[in-house]
Image 1 (cartoon, rainbow, N blue to C red):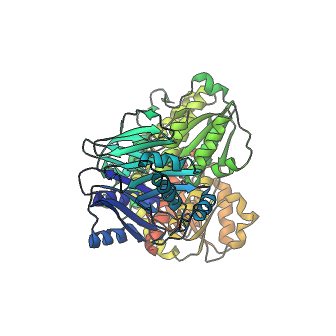
Image 2: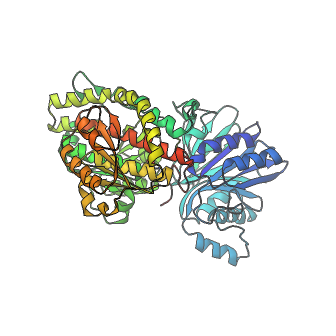
Image 3: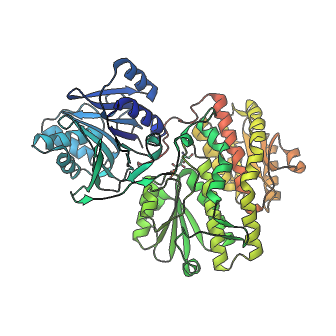
Length: 610
Ligand code: AGP
């Protein structure tokens, strides 16, 4: 986690760095800092807490100069404090870092044994001392960075200043993301695209074990070993306005309301409504490949994992292919059996989550074919994959993922339809019905967004004091129940559990009483009757029932204490409509409680630590 930025140009660096950091604050927000070349030396400013504290300090003290680096932190080594905030300084060297130096304890002892005094608890400070030690040995900044990084194991994206070389920033990366932005007058770098969108759309994605020297009139790229590289910038189609709140109180609410548009963009050009098929060359498989897949393994973390759980149901149901889902962190941690004939689908909004990246890499190395489903173009997982099937949800800034989740569902369903057609398990009429239904989903969501928000914001007055909430669903509603519980936990800090409704009687029913609201997902599908029985079991324990029901379902509504109606859909499409009220429920509870909706405590948008 953490976000790093850099600027080399002719304008005042500090406001640009601060503005870019603001767009990266979702990556971490417990402290922040800047380093700028100023009047022959490097000046540093660091503050604890959110960026506004750094902004206030900058307004007070100023930081003149047109070359600098910045950082927003999510603590891994050392608590949030000013001394642990980046940049870290050693002599004339200042460093910002995103990642984890795995051998930091060993390096720390070596440095301390040689007389270095550390001033922080961080792993990053070690990097600044290593670079300093090399520069004292007579090397220029680039060589010092190379030699220092040769001693380091772990993940890093770093940006480095040296007082001796005031016209440049040196950057390098391994396993943590870093993108370079170019214009005619300036060169930028950042951990993620949105940080640079107000300045440029021309971006270069750095690969692992690469180093770049950024100067005002351009950049030079090489391997860490010193071999020169050449890479042309890519044009990024996202606009800066896409990363603004556009009148909404929070990014999360804006992104929930953007779902119809995000889905339209994701479906655009991919649905063949005439033939009831999915058109996509992007998935990188031919008809033979489709027939010969032995098994699909879906790897992801967090919300993306919940999307894969729905993906598994679709793959088995529509394409009759054995499919398993696994949390990427667990897949990595065991000796998973995977190899030729397996198709691994790695699903990640950011495309940078380290657990998903490493799990997918391990599977690919063992012979599996790797398909990435990601939202960030050119991010690490798609770069490593055999093929990439992007979601087109636009930048997602709220830490709680919403629009990218429904876009991931769309890609997984499209892929399942495509595969089912090729494997002969989905006939033309079924495929046409699904394709038609999917094309209508953006409208179905749009129509119910405002009424649902109104109903839910009223409802939360009664339920927002609950300490525990249970979410129940069967079939495709089960992963949505998991997602509803995760959303509520992460932004409102209310304890919530998602359960397969059939499991309730095997334990969680013991939790139920009049103080525990139970959210029951009960679209009119094949599970309806049994979910209805589970609802009655909860009701008999005096639990208050919030039903997510199909519009007009009077029978279900009579059983519930409160209801949010969703559009009637084909059974396979129900996740798209049932999850939206759960996102809104979490949002409204959090807003009612006054928590920091877009930047909940202890979380970060992109998790680049293991
Ligand atoms: C989503 O609300 C969470 N913040 C989190 O679980 C997230 O989905 C997870 O970290 C995976 O991220 P990715 O999709 O970028 O890989």
